[in-house]
Image (tube, rainbow, N blue to C red):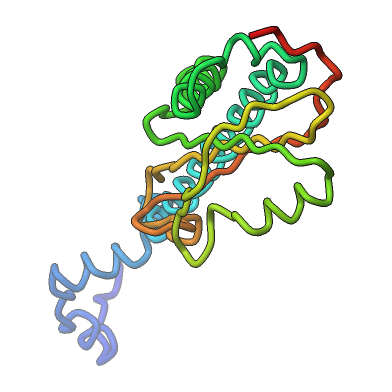
Length: 206
């Protein structure tokens, strides 16, 4: 026959201890849970990550546009190099500037806004003179864009020619790309240029 069990003081204390409240149990379970940790961690880095991604895209688009403009200026300038400009750009200075700009825009496809493109074609007798002239007429200075004096000078045989195309490029993420805006108001001046000596072509009779 099994003897009767006698309850001790310890057993009585354990039995008398109340169960923790439901809220306490839920909080303890929440602290131990690892579910959703990745989502919480991503929430901390999402905003900086998106800013970095926008900056990368902005910089890539800007350099792509610059490269496209450089290539377009180089291709169009061959008309000046070979003397084809004597017949293709045979109008007044403003007319020639407009025609040359249209040719650059056609070569640059859709990457360049032609309405924001300014063209400058200058001729010199030496490379030293060209360097001095370019330094004295920098279109981007003092945080602004200055194309005063830009125009089209018809190149003659064996002359030094400097062609510049200045694009007023609007940044897409201007709030986060302020360091790229060198002419203010969320814009960047992109300059494409080429310098060469024209061939000794024959000037057409007038």
